Length: 303
Image 1 (cartoon, rainbow, N blue to C red):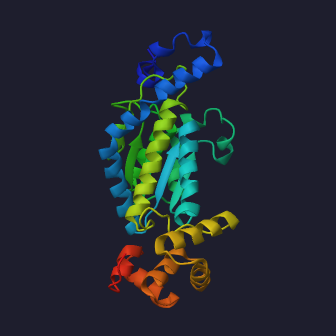
Image 2: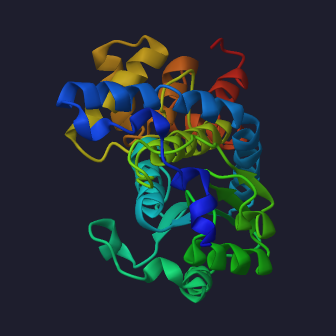
Image 3: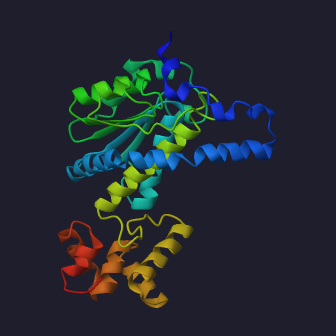
């Protein structure tokens, strides 16, 4: 018997057995009913996700990087999460990276057989210089995709922290990961279509992992994303609005601080909250490790 047939994600869903006899609205209610429980399964593994975030933060503080690697939907979700970090948190694109079996072309079309090669996964790790300061998160709903396992195994051999994210228990990922995050969301609405419930759970967890890590790195003040990169008109507007919300300054003050800080939101906020110039605000941020609240507290000002 093929071991794939034993996986929870590959079982028929008794709740959707007659879905082919339903109209559009009935189908959607049924999908929604199945989706309602995903957050509960994710909640059950939050301690594992929190432990993973702490490992990521530790790597970042050593100058390390976070890599996601997966095939198909799992790989695409990793790339999506990684690609959102630079505009949201002002990170260098190299800090969080997503890798997918078959390369970038696989983002929009399936590459037959790419996920079946552990050697290709290992090669990706070597080509990206993944090593002792880095974290690699292998993502696979089944927990047994050869490309992902090959990457996890090689990353571990090179001293990286290795984390697994899957939707089944007791998978081969356990051999290669220091930590496995395994929300078991149950059989899919359509048998084996893991882009649905499994994919949704992975997206939720990746959101939590990077957002929590970035908060712990000082890239959020209050609940504002103060390290965003104002790279277009919408983001410039958002940056100035964040400065106003963080400080209560009027439009003129915000414009002046934004210009003096060369568009660096954190610097502008510290300037306005402490009454300092741009150079002193930058120095305060440097002394505080990039945390706005701590930088302000260095001057004795309230936050």
